[in-house]
View 1 (cartoon, rainbow, N blue to C red):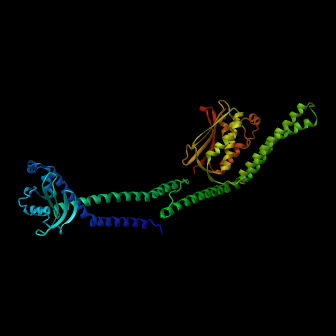
View 2: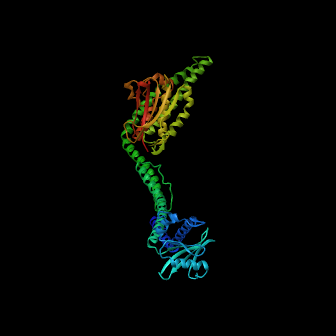
View 3: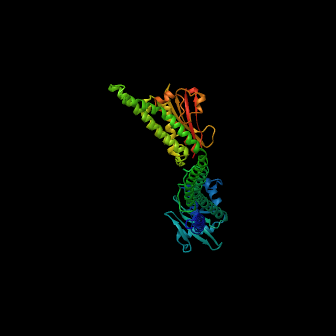
Length: 497
């Protein structure tokens, strides 16, 4: 591949090694000798400074130069240097070797111009001295010589051999050490930077695969790139979308299969129950409508107020019948399997908050306080439209039965006895439901307090719709009395997504 990681790594590290080796060779070839000579020049300059500092108007500081522990003697000893000093009459006043006639003669020749300098290479010169490179033909050795005049009076020459093995090894070792350390630091920094750059997307992919294994389909690879890792990250993202869609389809298909199996067994029984319950529930409002209509026809009450009351009763009962029929149609579709269940992954928290907002006016009319307690994000599997229907029935039921402190709480969180599921509960202050009635609340047209139910227009069908929806999801639901809080809690559970 054009952007192969293997090719990139090979090119980078091969190039890096080549650059380091080439730099080392070039540095040794061009700079080692210069460094070596420069260091000898510094040593000669230091020796000259020490000699010049310890010259007096009367000559040399004899005590300083005779002290074997003095800095000048230590410097000359450690660097194998020779020194000769002549006064203005060219008489020798100091030498570091017993036999220094050759050096004294050469210094005399340089000072008087008798000694030719054609074979000497001048490296550095100033007003008081010259530093030059010269080959001793007798000993076949290269020397660095420094000669000139002292600031007080007299002439000097300092000579240091360039072929000192000890010095050469030390200088070369120090130079190699300095260069190697610098190269090591640079290489380490580059390798650290590059390894970090290459391993960061790998670490991201590792975390991404872990989240996908936990069915967290919000995980996405974001580092990009056009090499193998970048392509792998894109494939992870596509696989996450495909898995989410596939799981959604499988859950929908599984629910549909289970519903098909159950539907045929229940259809005949549901038809007979439906007709029986409808005829029973419609009997009372129809009787009221007929009675009040006959009263109007026979003009039992002649005053306008009574006639308006009769009309209001007829309209109210007709409205209740219409609402009940609509709910019965919805329930009939659910129980007969005509309502398509579309299982999808969605965040239920915005749905809850939206219902709370839409019910605020009704809650104010009931003088009730509705509060949500739970996370800001909770993804579940279900049919979002049908879940909203369940919430609507639970909240309407809570508003119609709230009493006492008149508080309604909606909570969302982990299901108490199920791993990987969440429970959504609606609690309201009010009268507790008799224990013998708890199990029958989900039956069609069942009413615990028939007088109160009729007062707010309840039909006894809302909780049956909840039962049908939750059965279509194959998820649990229920109701419990909460004596400690003086109220009742309705709940349902959904699988986490």
